[in-house]
Image (cartoon, rainbow, N blue to C red):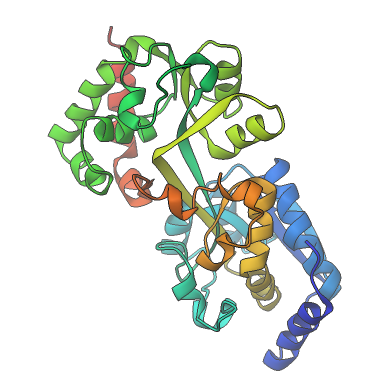
Length: 356
């Protein structure tokens, strides 16, 4: 992404107006791989060049242990971190993150509306400025269904009409939500239903109907390979993995947007950072609609600002989890539900897997 000179000057002016002195260095920590490479290309490097800031990058595997250790030992070496919403909630509650005021720290949209009105629900809070939504979705190999093709979550569970092995991630998260949707529970009622013993039993009973046909996966690279090798006809997968398989490898895969499970992540600042003003200036630039659109074009992850969606390359836009046409039947993963229930449901899931 190329930032115009006017944009560069506006950033520099922002520092001058607030009295904040641009740091000579910043650190940026994300998830590595092609995603972080896209972040560096569209946001990190342009900001560093424009402000003469040396931005050092690091990668991690999520969680809050490393952030907690830095804060507790008062040896904070990370400034900006790309963090999943579930981790943001925990870290914010523990006081491990600096506060972000959307009215001050985030850019308005082009019409002058405040950032809060431009963001999708749940995508910003007082510790995080959301940047992307990614989904775990159901997908199928079009070559395996020459006639009628799957369209709904219920079709994933219909072995008679759509025969063949299925691939699911070896986790209750996703499997239980889809089982209830396939059994007729509206997406908006899924977590309320799963909060009851009867709802959990209902979900596992539905999973029983396909258990013998499931191939379990654990690494994100497995579903596209299982589909390509013909080991399964349908699978759950991370949206960007399938997008890459379709666009780069020309695989005959198709998304089932019905029941997509959307996750949110965003930028946070570690409590005790010595570069808070510069970190906030970076986040303000990196979460502008055009910046989010550029990141989405590079990754097929959905931008979390509504005004950014129309700015994405149309070739990529139809694959975005946040595209308006994909919202019907979608479900936002509830991080609070899983924070409260993960241990118990993981145990139940392990017992269920072991039963014949």
